[in-house]
Amino acid sequence: MGEYFLYYALSLAGLGPQDVTLDPQPEVTDAVKIYTDGQADAVSAWEPDVLDAEGAGAKVVIASDKLRAILDVLISSRQAIDTKSEAIQAFHDAWFEALKIMVDTPDQAEQAILEWGHPDWTFIEKPGDLAASLEHLAQATLNSNQIAFQRPQLLISRIGEAQAVWARAGQAPPQADLSQLVDGRFALGSARDTALFTTVPPVNSSFLLTAKVDLPQLSAEEQQSAQPVVKLPLEKIDFEPESTRLTQKASDDLIAQVLPVLNSSQLYLKIEGSAAWPGPEGRFTTEDIRSFAEDRAYSVQQFLAQQGINPNRLIVGTLDPKFPNSTNEAELVQDRIVRLTLVTTGGR
Image (tube, rainbow, N blue to C red; front, side, top):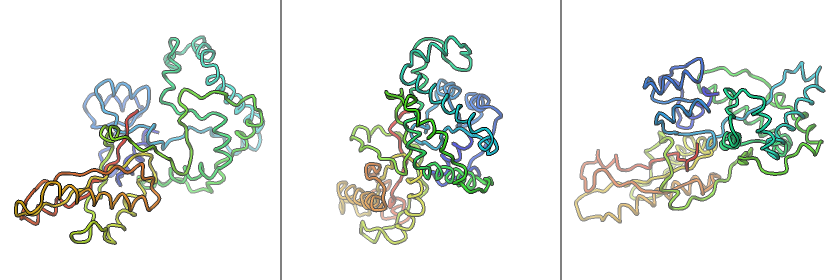
């Protein structure tokens, strides 16, 4: 899971494992240790082990609460489905019954876990631990599973997306009829028992499985505090001379290099325009340059919105030129850019 999440995160920036130095470890604890020992610049891991990295001062660049590339699923062999369908249905029923207890009567669920023991595995040692452990886990109740399996194409598309991530990473995912890998009969079978449906929200009710995710518009304060995740490689975006109009090449570049990133993530995009400030001094004011830079950023924002991207995800800003009042064309070119950065509003 950690390896896949790493490849998925790299793919957002148009990168692959060949663009970084990988140090695979047999266990996630080993991966975290080489990071905390200073032998690696970053680590892909999960709770509770990743908490050790955070305790050592690590900054969370991106987590699954913002980049929901991984879904927990139940897997059964085709042979078991064909010959032991009743047992598989009973397992699903028990699964959703336990989930209902955890959601509807969490104190009862926590007490059962405490009595069972094994805190080294459950990390539930005292009252309140269960709720705390579930804060960052988006739980899919039977209610959500019924909706998901009524539209299996969404799940099928996730499998296809995973195959593409592995392929871009140089792996060879098995080829199969993806529609045959999703079987909703057992979740839908459990849904026939209305007693298994939860009646209150789970601790973390943010589970969402849709083709597109609607993100809220950020306040000015939230935009200022947004944390960068990765800067996209595309930076030189062509405009018509002395204009804010995108060239055809710029449109093609945005479609090829930026749209796939936005369509495969749930992050915001910060669009920061920068304009060259040619000399001689006094010809243009600071306000002139910033206004022109902002207009170019707005052009990119409008173009992406027209391609179907939720405008709430697109944050416009400006960059001050590095070479104000320059007469050197090589310097001026460096200021004619639009920086595109995936950002997150926080969380873990």
